Image 1 (tube, rainbow, N blue to C red):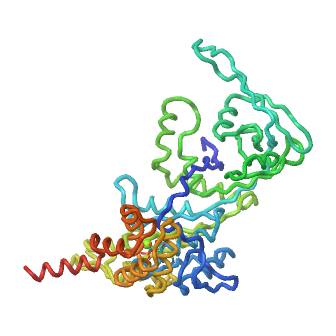
Image 2 (image 1 turned 180 degrees about the vertical axis):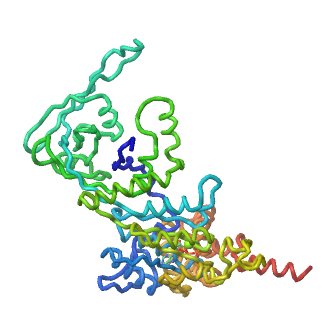
Amino acid sequence: MANPIITQPPPPQTSREGRIATHSHIKGLGLADDGSAMEVSQGFVGQQKAREALGLHLQLLRLGRHSGRPLLMVGPPGTGKTALALALSQELGSKVPFCAMVGSEVYSGEVKKTEVLGSCFRRAIGLRIKETKEVYEGEITELTPSEAENPLSGYGKTISHVIVGLKTVKGTKQLRLDPSVYESIQKERVVVGDVIYIEANTGAVKRVGRSDAYASEFDLEAEEYVPLPKGDVHKRKELVQDVTLHDLDMANARPQGGSDIMSVMGQLVKGGRTEVTDKLRREINKVVDKYIEQGVAELVPGVLFIDEVHMLDMECFTYLNRALESPLSPYVVLASNRGMTTIRGTEYDGLTGGSGVGIRSPHGIPIDLLDRCMIVKTALYNRGDIRRVIEIRAKTEGIQLSVEALDRLADEGERSSLRFALQLLTPGSILAKGRGATEVGVQDVGELSELFLDAKRSTGVLRGMEGMQ
Ligand SMILES: Nc1ncnc2c1ncn2[C@@H]1O[C@H](COP(=O)(O)OP(=O)(O)OP(=O)(O)O)[C@@H](O)[C@H]1O
Ligand SMILES: [Mg+2]
């Protein structure tokens, strides 16, 4: 093997947070200690049976005893299937990998369907790697880059080295470091007063947090304060890293290092899908197995959630059946809002005598896979539940509603769907603002229901037109 398998994850990509998304109000499954679902908790309203079922699965998952049987959530649209899956991911915490995909994501002109599924499976399997590393750790007391004339161009200056002072409870040390380390220091946005560690053999810099000596500087800020490290500056430290198999695939597939044009181009496509071959995966699996055997790493099976699973076709289902049986399988959660439908990919393959109808099956899932699933049903909401969800949602979006408007929206929700009622919230607030009011009134909701049709009314209109022809 030319290149050793990399077990370092790529640096985490910073995500934009704080936006209000469809499910922002959901904070967890809202279960009591005994596992029973509370009426309203953590943003979840009603749907108790399904929540309790998921809670039970959560326990199995925590014990590492999921038996390779997928969980299938079925129910009418807008009954909280996707919300339940997200709640499950929140309960799992950030250390357990969770990969969410939608069935239709497998269809791409460039990548094979099974390849997309395969990479999602690997995103959902984590590895906790414990390593003892030689590090320099401490609070930064000094950070001075030293400049020198650029020997090549004569223009501008380059950094020749950087002096970093590190302090721990036990003592201080001044390090003279290579300019490449300075780059990583800048990338981590490290400043004097931060606690960092630098890996001795790779030069990788990790910011641990801000030293708590600076804690009283501001009243309010999003900063993690950490105590001054104990022991010497230069020491051996046990580091725990959480990576997914997919991280390892990508780190090994991407061209590494160098400054020639090919590796620069390689860097450009890193967000895109570079091909990860089966051979590479097998090699990575081998190294992973060895790590697990040696006790260096521990497998953390996560959750793979496939929403709208009826969008998968026969080829994907066959792949899924096989992947579920592998020892490196995550816990799979599926969701579908379909009843009896044709399984995709069976319409024209002659299986049904070329009738073009295809094989019909519940939820569009082949019977053999369905047989393995534990099925959880989500039920339709009553008016009270709908009213409560709207209330919670309005609070999350920062929209004020009058009581009558809330009642009217609940009526709309009951007549049409919860989703439709929720969709009226933001436009309602715009209308209210337009007439100079701070809270959404019943007239705004009334106006909206004239402006927008819900699915039922729209169908009604079409039926009416058919009747006229
Ligand atoms: N029990 C609930 N408590 C709080 N919010 C809910 C609840 N059920 C659904 N919601 C909210 O209602 C909206 C629709 O729910 P969701 O998208 O989960 O439905 P779904 O079952 O996945 O529907 P579909 O089958 O169409 O995908 C979301 O904004 C969701 O957060
Ligand atoms: Mg959904």
